Structures are given as structure tokens and as C-alpha cells.
Length: 256
Length: 329
Image (cartoon, rainbow over all chains, first blue to last red; front, side):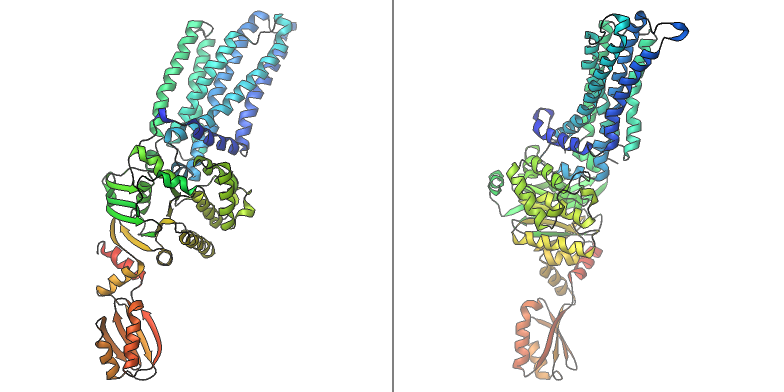
């Protein structure tokens, strides 16, 4: 049974579903911890390491020439986090409903498959995105405070950080949400689903390593645009796959 | 609220559910075969059948959750399987699935409020209906308690309230008392009887024969194919007329006389009559209707009645006979 083309999606319905999930998350400690703790740990630990690093042999901290290379690289951790953080939520929001058998009554309401999928997507996308942006903001403030004396200026915010946080971070989060939707359709256990879904970080970690090893130059505008375009294409393709996976007929007759 | 749903119905029809040769296959497996039935507005229709008979598949097709392989089905005049009609159908119906599927981390109130929103109920309607149904089901005091902490019976009641939150024209219930303890099952059955008094149309999947007999106006017996439909009395009668064992047993104060036996045998509706001392066994098609004439004939022939009991084919007999035969009337 196919219904509810993407064009006919009523956002209000999707928002009701997302708002219900937000309410549920507040009761799930593991979700709250994963959202709040991990970005904050990165935000505090890296500036602390930078502050205490580079003092060996009487050196006066990490030199400015190295800091300007390290700081954008550190910020890239938040792109990896953007791919990781939706995993527990997306797994919970779909596999959780499968386990609780709550999808059938939900599917029996006058909402389309696309509206439900979008609602689940919003529920899995917004909290991690907010957590990454929040963590990145704390990170940039602490890093500025740590490095101001060495650099003589506040490194953050800057245009490349903004480009990273407002393009690659949402695209990475979207990628993760969609991979998790697809994985969730075949898995009946939240933890297994999370473990498989977490593999989404691998291409981003690879991208990071390629940048560090000098294979690609993420600082170059053209390379950055190619990466963005590649993510966009993959996200669009995955959207169609997840849309095909999330059909009531499939859910009720084929989902394990 | 009722008015808004009536506006959705294109033509007022007496049949709220109509199916014609409805079939669903899963690969080579035929889950529902050539199902033709109708359910009238205000009727409680019981769908009886063993596990795997196709009851849940039928409900899922009628609720526009899965597609049909062939045949036709209409709910309130809307075509099941037609994309444009499926949302309208789902707005008219409520579903209590075989698994309650509640949000266990949400309170009873929040569970119902969420569904009320999805059905476009206003805040005032939601508040009113949540209070009304939770009170009716004895859960109002527990409205702020997480659904996950509820007993099975309480969860089932909450699932029923959820299906009713938008005042549906038609309620589908898929084995609502299965796996419940006797007390909880009784509460749920009593509530269904309350809904019946309100003239709601209910399509009840069950394999509890007693429940079907007590609650349903009509019953359909399904074993992939629809084997029989009728009121519980009609189904019992059908078995009796087909060589069944339905009868009235009359205990007399004295030995049965030839005059009494002759008087009874003169009645056109009476089948075989046997006498054993003061006990008479009289085969009848419809004892409830025909007993008055039987009693009158006995008294007229000079007999003195001690007691009258109806014995014989129950719905269980009918069900087992038809399902085991895998076909029938």
C-alpha cells in the first residue's frame, strides 16, 4: 500500500510525531547523556589538552603556526559527532516503536508514511544537531580563550567554521538518520541497530584522516564544495531508499 | 464531533463495511480467500476463526494498512485500496490491534493526547474525551502514570480508549480480551457492551466463542474462506437442522403419556420426540421460539410440567464442525 507522496506531506502531522518523541527522550537517560555529555567532553577536553600541551622541554605551548592547522582539524570532530549522535536516537525512535509494537496503531491514524517518516526524521535530527552546535559553540569559546594569547586574536568564529557547522554537520546528521532508518527496518534490537548505525562515522573519519594525511585539502573551497555535493547526492539517494523502506505494507508484513 | 465525520461520508449507506471477493495472498500463501461480507451501521460483528485464519489480515486490509491482492472492499462508501480514500477511511475508524502498542514512557493521558492530535481533535475535544473514556474504563485516577507500569488489563483498556479518542464511526478490535485474566477480560467485555448500547459499529476479531455469543449481533466464521455468517442463534439453528442435536428437554411430574407424545408429534415444527420415564427430549430448530407451542401442547394433552431446558448445539459445536470441515453453509 503506497500512499502520501512527498508533496502531500503535512508538516503539522510530522511535528506532532516529533514532539511526542521529544517528550519520550526526556525519560531516556542514555539518550540525554549521549546528547549532552559527548559534545561537552570534546568541547572541554580538547581546549584543556591544547592549554597544557606544547610545554615539553621548556617550550611555551603550541606555536601559532601549528594552532591554525590544529583548530579547524579539531572542529572537524563535530562533523564526526554529527554522524554519531543521531544513532542512539534514530535507533530508539524506530526500533523502539517496533519493539513496543506501537507502529501499527500509529499507521492506522490518518497520517501518511511520509509524514511519519519525516516526523521520525525530525525527532532524530534536531536534538543531535542542537547538541553538536551547542558543543561546538562551547568548544570555540574555550578554544578562543585558550589560544588568544598565542594567536593574538580570536580564531573562532570564522567563515570556514560556519561553513562546516551549517553545511557538513547537518548533511552528516541527515546521512546518519537515514542510514539508521534503513538499518532499523531489518533489526529488532536497539543495541544492534545502534552498533550498525554507528558505522556511519567511518566515511567521515576517513575524510578526516585523508585531510590530515594530505590526500585531500578540506581547507580548499573547491574540495569542500565537492565534499558537500557528494554528501548531498548520497543524502538524496538514501532518502529514496529510506522512503521505500518505510512503507506501511513493508513495516507490517516484511519488517523483522 | 460526530457531525464532522458524517460529513465525510459521501452517501449514507446502511452497510458500513462491504467486501466483495476480497483476497489477500502472501506469495503462494492465501491468507484471505474470496471474502464477501457486509456489516451494518450500529452492528457488532464478530469475526471468529482459529489462529492463521486471516482475521488480522482482513482487519489490516480494511484499515488500509496493507493492500488487497484482489476483490473489492468499501468502508462507509470509500474504496479500500484507493489512495485518495485511505486517509478518509482511517479518519472514520479506530483500531485496537492484537498488540496494544502503547508508548510505555508516556503517561496514559499523553498517549491519548498524542493520538487525539493525530486525529485532528481540538484541545477541548481531546480533554473531554480523554476524561470521559478514562473515567469509563476506570483509569482516570491513573492518567499521569506511565503506561509501561500498567497491568495487561489496564493497557488493553487504554488501547481501547486510544482507538475511541476521535469518536470513530467504526471500531476494529483484534482479539481485545486475548491474554487477559478473567477479571480484566470481563471489564473489557462489559465496556464493549457499553459501546454496543451506544449503537457503535464494532468489528470484533476473536476466537473466544462465549465472548462472540454474548457480545455480537452477527458472527462470521473464517478459515481463510468465510465459512458461515449469521446471528449466533441462526448458526446454532443451522447445525441443528443439518442433523445437529438441539432440543428441548421437558421434565414432567408424571410418566409421559401417549396423549402427550401424540400432541407433540402433531406440531409441525417438532422433529423427533423421545420419552424416558417422565423425561421428554424434543428436537427443535429454534427452541427459544417454539417452546411456547410445545408447552401448550403438553398442557393441552394433560401433562404437568416440572421444568423446561434447552440443550444441544452451542456456537462451539457449530464453530468446531464448520472449521473442521473447512467449508459449509
